[in-house]
Amino acid sequence: MTLPVFLAHEATPAVETLQVGDSVELAGDEGRHAAKVRRLHVGERLDLVNGQGLRVRGVVEAVDSSALTLHVEAITNEAPPTPTLVLVQALAKGGRDEQAVESATEIGVDHVLPWQANRSIVKWTGSKAERARAKWEALTEAAAKQSRRAWVPTVEPVADSKALARWVEKLVSDGGICLVCHEEGNETLVEYLQQNEGDKSPVHEATAIAVIVGPEGGIDEGELAALREAGASVVLLGPHVLRSSSAGAAALTLLSAATGRW
Image (cartoon, rainbow, N blue to C red):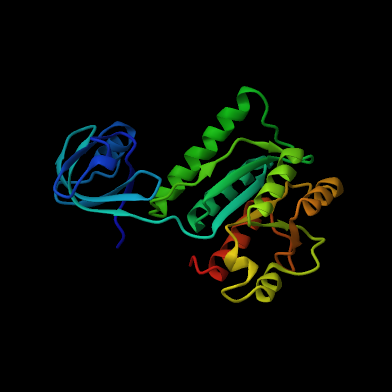
């Protein structure tokens, strides 16, 4: 059974300075959760991660009401998986965008870019934008812990459609691939991947692969044209129309398998 994972942001000393045999205290929210909610006891093991690939495995040697102390048994640095996977998720009502971000994190996405699409009903403006982004960051942290990840996805500032087109253009020029999930695609994602099989294929040589998922009302014609002009490819996910909450997860699952990340 995999060990429980806790974020090491409030560990003392900092986990980046630890060596095998050291002791480290986990306090703050994570320490209270480990001690009071999970009720971890002396002798149990857990992992501390810094969200950037560092994993510290330790055994609990002391517990109080709001913290615990670990004896460090092992330290590993996990390389970032390649290619980088990015979810561009349009803002959606009913928490469907949040569901998408949570599922994508569990699958293994590396970066999330919130998209204020023309047809997005939800709007991130002013101070609301930072609060909403912070909520997505909290979702990625919780989902990364649940799925025992050492890497926590980054959540970028929200982009409008013009900014997204510029972002796609740079991604493609830097050796990345951008795939837009849309019903106007002439081929499915599976067909696209089958046509790009082999170690020297664009999919396997790409530095990053981004998946763009539109809002409930869909991606409008102007946005789709701009994304194509920026270098994105338009693909179908399959014979059925998926919700905004599930389309990204489906695409990332196929990409994770095709690129050997799974």
